[in-house]
Every structure is written in C-alpha cells, then in structure tokens.
Amino acid sequence: MLIKKRSGEELSSFLNVAKRCAEEGVFLTDTHAHLHFPEMVRDIDDHLKEASKVGVERFITVGINKKDSSKALKLAEEYENIFASAGIHPHDASEFNHSDIDFFIHTFRKEKAVAVGEIGLDYFRNHSPKDIQKDVFALFLDLSVSEKLPFIIHNREATKDLIAVADPIVGKKNHGGIVHCFNGDKELMKWALDAGLFISFAGNLTYKKADELRDALKYIPLDRLLVETDCPYLSPMPFRGKQNVPANVIFTAYTVCKVKDIDYKNLLFTLENNINNLYNIAHAKHIDY
Ligand SMILES: [Zn+2]
Image 1 (cartoon, helix red, strand yellow):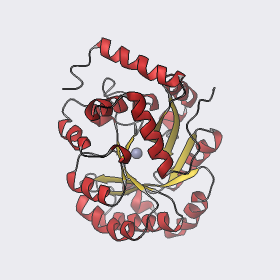
Image 2: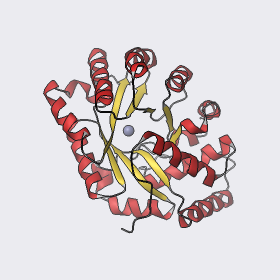
Image 3: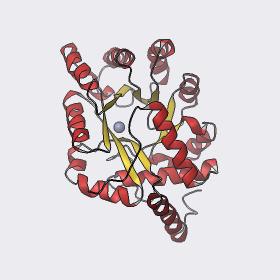
Image 4: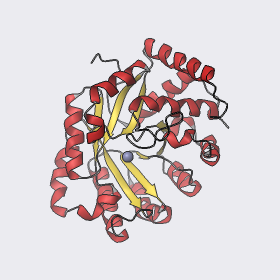
C-alpha cells in the first residue's frame, strides 16, 4: 500500500527532502553493504558520489569469509568514511579453518574494523552443514565478546537454533549487535529486543507485499532501529530487480518514516545516535571524491 501510493510527485518531493538534509549536514549511514564485492568495487567512486548527493555519507562494508573480510578491510582503509566488519557467513562456514582464528583476531584489532560479521545460520540454502554453521557461529560470537566488538547476525529459517546458540553468549556479556536484514520473524524480534540488540531493515521493507514486515516495524522502538542496503542485493522499490547501490538506503529510511510517522530529518538524527551507541566510530561527514 505504501509504495503503490507513491506517485512520481511524492518521490521527487521526498528526494528534495533528502537533498536538503544533506545540504544541512544531516547524513545517513548504510550500516550493511558489500562495497568490496567485485560488482560494487569496480564503480566505487561513482557509488559513493551518488550516495553523497542524497546524504548517504558513511558505510559499513561487511565481510563474509576470510578472503572477503581482507578485501572489506582494505577498502575501509582506503576510504575515510567506509568501515569494515569481518566474519564467516553461514554459507561459508564449512570453509572455515581453526587456523584462521589468528587472522580474524588480527583483523578485528585494526582501526577500521568495527564489527564481527556477518555470522549466523542459514537453513534456507544450507550451503554448509547445520552443525558446522552452529559451531562457527558460536565461535565468532565468543570472539565478539573477547574482542569487545558488536556482531552482525544473519538468520534465514533458523530462528530456534540461532537463539539456542546465541542466547547463552549474548546473555552473558555482549558489546551490542545487529539482526541484519530483518524479515519480520516475531520470535527473533522479541529475543533480539530483550537481548538489547538492534534490528536493521533492508530494501525488502519497501516491497508491496511486505505488510507483515512493516507491521513488525511498528513494534520496534526507534532507538533499536537501523537501516541498510545489503547491496548489491535486495534493491528497494522503485529499483527492485536491479543491482542495489548504497544511495538506495534512503528509500528504506523513507518507508520507516511513513510506518513510524516520523519526519525524515528526525529519523536521521535517531539513526546516527543509534550508530554511535553501537559503534565507536567517527560521525558521518561529507567527503569530496
Ligand atoms: Zn549481507
């Protein structure tokens, strides 16, 4: 319903609001992107310029395995406003070798490394056996505790096991965390909120049929909310089906505004505050490319 009603006129007036916020120095962060992936990094300056035009000025590029996490870190070290995370995505869990732990600890201690992730469980694709996924997930949660970093969780059709693995570790001690690309799962939402975690919404929030997801958003306090693109995946409306880019995070933020009945600038202040509560990183600022 939200998207159908969005006429060209409404969209252009929203884009003007976003640009005005950018001119006033009120910026938005894409908290989960894969900017170092080959299909993104080859046009990275264009993506950053395009994002900057609509006020998206800070990015967290998320690693999915050992080699990929090195690439994430390298990109973050080249760009002041890009930060990186390192981890093993559940798809890649069976590739993980215990001798890689030193590499990850070394990586987590770099200045531009801000999180452990993405980690978690994915029983939809099951690219790695469940037991291995669970072991690797638990190990990285432990690392997030010992390295005093927040974690970024990926969950697909594995809620019960995910909570069973994470709860004892997260309940003991944690430095914050994010359930990324939230899909509306109420059990996961309740657990995450009770555990003090953040819930991050991606472009699927804007889809026509996502009424349930938008309903779930109504229950999530603003001070537990983040937005992301997960680019190159999951383009929001009106770009669904195309390769996603970090600038598109504004459309997810726009949908949050409508669902939560909050104005865009206020939402940006709230999200910036949330990020600073979670991550020890510099404020978003404009950079000329
Ligand atoms: Zn991702």
